[in-house]
Length: 385
Ligand SMILES: *Cc1c(COP(=O)(O)O)cnc(C)c1O
Image 1 (cartoon, rainbow, N blue to C red):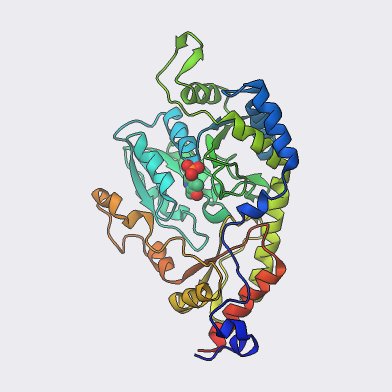
Image 2 (cartoon, rainbow, N blue to C red):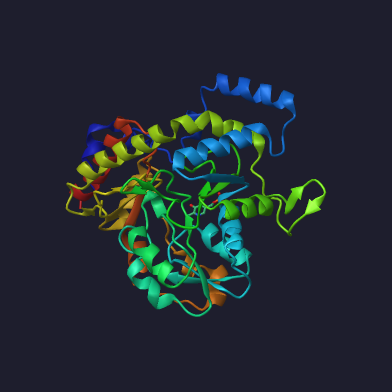
């Protein structure tokens, strides 16, 4: 196959890509952190490791950032969902409705409280098609977990009234959508509770696992604080049986260092996505997903629909671009969920996406040169067909 880039660039012809566009930016993100090391050193000297002061400070700053009354640090995004479901009263045997294409953690959390995940197909925003939710509700349904997947938001304006009509609590999986919003109202603030992840590859990240659950409900917040710390209301009183799911105070020090950058991180991703949209969207073989004007999409993942996706993906990977597919096999068809009885074809939009979605790096450390290289590589691929 003739590739104009290879003609101009002898290095590419020899199989050595002209540029690398890596997926993980972590070495760059934490390259220059002398001030953070100083803070960590001062913190370690206090020995305040468990539910310490920096955690309380971080929780306050996170709640303020998102616009909720409470934020409770827990040890992962998965636990944020799990504790949220537990706190709204989900128990073994219940059904919990969620999206057919999500990261396994959403479904793992539902499973951990003994409930049965019930899937609903997504639309071209990669989030639950809320028009399909009512048909999935049964007398066993006890909660709905909308997943604000890839940095989009589920259409909460439509989902909240449906949930209210059926008396079902909403626990938002906002792990990929920190500062995602509809009409400026943030992901995580529409339901009874919202779950966030601080996993190293999330938009706001720490150096280990971590998560937060947010809520405006004072009683729910008290319950969540008990659940994450063995149900201990004080040193000598176990008020209920909970979990060991505290957010590490050491990681809260990292979180406090990063949190002032969260808005800028979202803005950088939004700007990178707009640049890709403009240039990739000019190619007839690429379709850009809907970009509703009243939605702030924070692009945890940047996904487009591409003709000849498998060949394009191979072409990009060969040229040093770490493009990916989220996901080649959606969660509902994974072998570990076979007992639920779903089969290929149950969720046609999710299934359709597996054939034509491709994810490109979009993070805040991506350079314009790297973006231009991605655009040129995709353009050359289709020109060479
Ligand atoms: C990351 C993520 C989670 C939680 O993951 P943790 O690794 O447990 O923090 C949950 N749901 C989605 C959609 C995620 O992307």
